[in-house]
Length: 391
Ligand SMILES: C[S@@+](CC[C@H](N)C(=O)[O-])C[C@H]1O[C@@H](n2cnc3c(N)ncnc32)[C@H](O)[C@@H]1O
Image (cartoon, rainbow, N blue to C red; front, side, top):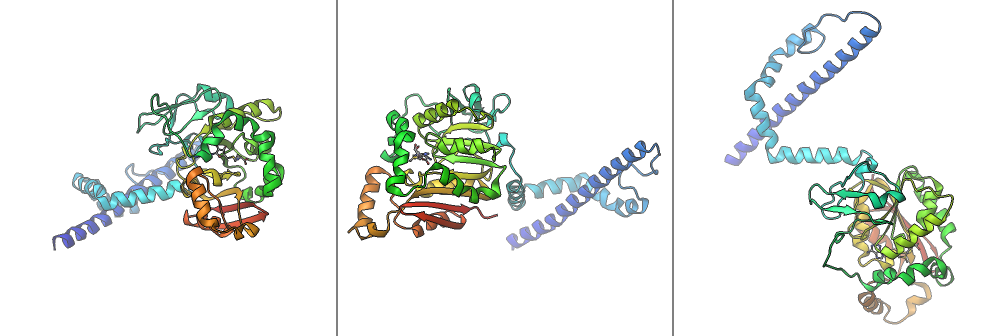
């Protein structure tokens, strides 16, 4: 009975609250139109029609709403409205409304980078400057965790473990391999080219042309080249000038250093609106629904947990945002290898890498992480997968 009575009271409270908000809004709008009218009159050197200061331009409307206004402005009603606003139901309703409004609004560039611990937007020390050259001078702070993140001479370290002195962390072999300086050095000097010979990869330029078709709806927006390696695609994205922000992101410091050196060596590449970020794919330092596109070339099979990576990508993509990735699929004649499934499990546990056995597996991965419109294009072991965050 008590609960029913409480709910009944809440409902009455809701009606009053909406009435209060409606009247306030009406008041604001009328004041605004009054201001516009005054400005127009002033411009035309005319004097406005006489009206009461409290509300509206028409005397009849005013007299009609006067008792209502008196009621909503009374201290008793204000107190009551404040109490209703504090109720958990209203608070949840307001949060949902706010989230829905925020999600549909494009985020300003300075609101894109977020703390990898709590995902709250990071505050720049000074003006946010998105440029390769600004990273050594950049310090970003999380107002909630009170943690600072700073850049070194090549990139911003936005990993959770950034700044630790004694504590070190190791990834599985498939990630650690790419942190070796020799691998970063060799990556664009033969390693990547070998993917075309035994994997059917068309090569960076052709892959770039292929993915542009999927990226068309997000041209002009921001793009993250996730697990960029030495940055062959980050450079192509930046040189195309099709994106307002390019983030070259990888977990390997040595790859990012190589990426920085290649950018510096190229002549026709702008440093503006391009940043290099160290981050773990399973803990992306970006605000939710803030990014237009994510590309991940030849990387899904290297991630310790592809589902955590794709789920994170879904989180940071804005509704309608695009994910495009390439990887290997071991099927066709390879599917006749006996005990292929248990073999891949053992290999996966040892190396931390993932061997995909079919397109369906990849599509399922994207769908299970909440993405839609999944497509696959194949060439022997090579696959390009694209998907979209629901609008
Ligand atoms: C084969 S390379 C791909 C480089 C480039 N995208 C390409 O298309 O050639 C795989 C990259 O994934 C990165 N990687 C591995 N584990 C990662 C993780 N947990 N988070 C972010 N990147 C990771 C490695 O550092 C490496 O640079």
